[in-house]
Image 1 (tube, rainbow, N blue to C red):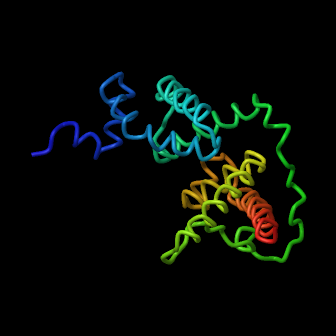
Image 2: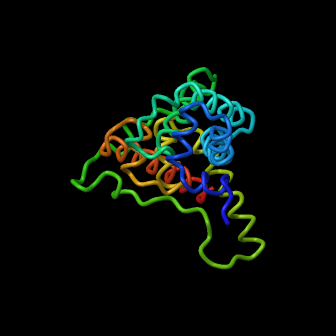
Amino acid sequence: MRTEKTATLENEPELVRRAKSGDQRAFTELVKKYESTVYSFAFKVCRDEEPAAETLQDTFVNVYRKLNQFNGKSKFSTWLYQIVTNNCLMKRRKSKLEQQSVSLDSAGSSHTGQDPEDEVHPIHTVPLTETTPQDDMVNKELREHLDKAILMLPMDQRIAFILRDVEGRSSEEAAKILKTSVPALKSRLRRARVFLQKQLQEYMKA
């Protein structure tokens, strides 16, 4: 026999409805369900534990205050990611790291008539076959270099890259999260991929 807790976790719309009506227990269940997801995404964007933890806290404060604004037209997780993304952007604007960002608006400006997202393949860093200890060391160094390169991306391109190529979300959902059009999302993603691939190529030549 299923418990009420199990049932509410499986029925998210009902859990959200109860939380909107002021049910603190339901809101707590939403926090428990998504806190690791929110922290993981914030850490991927910030690449630092402290701002990721601050973003986690800020996000659920915002969710608590704005929950009645959620109209159910999108998935709750999409709406939640919009809040996380906004918090990441706000934190970025306040950070001195903004001065270190590289403007890539002109990168790869040539147009071939293809879908902008499809012109550059996704970047994969996880080995698909068994590896030796030496391979593991090389892959670790490569991931560290990629992390540094990701931090150099403008925030809008960084988030587009993380949503699509790291978390595997669809272009449509990523565009909703970023509150932009699918073509604009794909353009950001293409510029991010071009820059990151260039950084990895230079690293491999070193």
